[in-house]
Image (cartoon, rainbow, N blue to C red; front, side, top):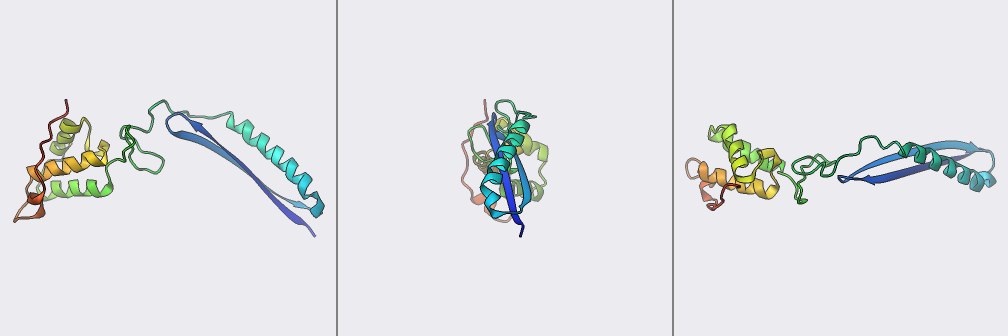
Length: 161
């Protein structure tokens, strides 16, 4: 009776800019005798470890310091900022677009407002900044027929210097 021996070896290296490289190798083999498992396991482990280590020496792209920050996305597609705050949420972006659409506002004006107050475009905002921008839009576009737009608190925010 043949015995299947499956081995996997993986290694991940941390790199600058909250990046990492990972490589793994898997092997499946058949043994004729169960008593061969310890010896074959040791040989496979050493062989796989060497193969992975040899490959990991070629790291490829290593991001510069700060890569993935200040409005860039992290590995999950979520925007990340230098202070670690999550970027603008899809719901916030949808609400901003809804306010623009319902008020026939110029998207460039909203983008300029974001730059004026926060130093960056709408998609580069943190969630807190996006919330403040939404407050500003509610003030600028109070809505029609007593909608909830007029019910938000007024802001005393000053443009970014």
